[in-house]
Length: 244
Image 1 (cartoon, rainbow, N blue to C red):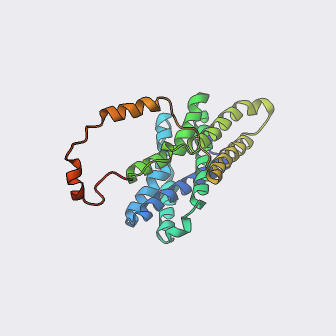
Image 2: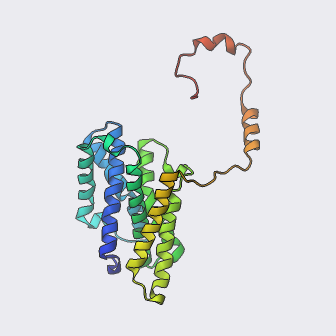
Image 3: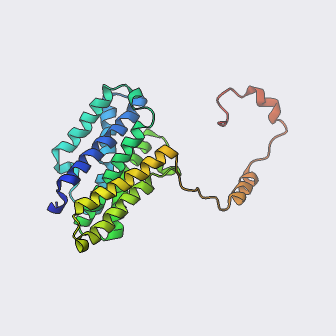
C-alpha cells in the first residue's frame, strides 16, 4: 500500500465512514427484525462494499483484508445497533450521519486513487464509488429501492467532495497548500450539500423528455378490457389488485 495514503486525517475519515455506513446497514436489518448475524452481515457489506470495489478497480490490496480493525468496527457497530432501540435513529439523524460517512468516504476514495497514480477523472469516480456502492449493495440485498434511484442529492454530494479533493490535490503543491486543507474543504463541501438536501429536500430534475410518447405507448400496449370484466370484479380479493 502506498504510504502517502496513511495519514492521520484520512485514517480518521476511513474509520468514520466505515462506522456510519456499517450502522446504516445494521439498522436496515434491525427494522426488518432480523437476527444479530444478519445485522452483522449488513453492517460489514455496507461498511466495506464501496472501498472493496474501489481497491479492486485501482489494483490496491483490499483494505479490510489487511487491516484487522475494519471488520471489528463493523461488528462493534452492529452490537450498538442490536442494543439500541431503532426509534433512537428515526427521523433525519441517520440521514445527517450518513452524509458524514458519504463525504468522508468520497474524500478518502479519491485521495487513495490519486496516491495510486489514477488519473484525475477516474480518481474522482473512485471517490463516488467508495461513497455510494456500499449503500447500493445494502439496498439491493435488502430488496428495497436505492437512494441513487431518487432525484434527491446524494451521488451529487459525493461527486462534489470527490471533485474538490482531486482538483485541490492537483493545485495544492503549486500554491503551497497542505493536502490536509484540501481534504477538510472537500469533506465540508460534500457534507454541506448533503445536509442541505436533507433539510430542504433538494433534488435534481427528473428526466421528462418523451413522456407523452411513453404514455401513448403504454395505452396502446394495454390489453382491451373484456365486456365481462365487471361481472367478476366482486370476486377479486382485497390486496390482490394494483397498488393505489
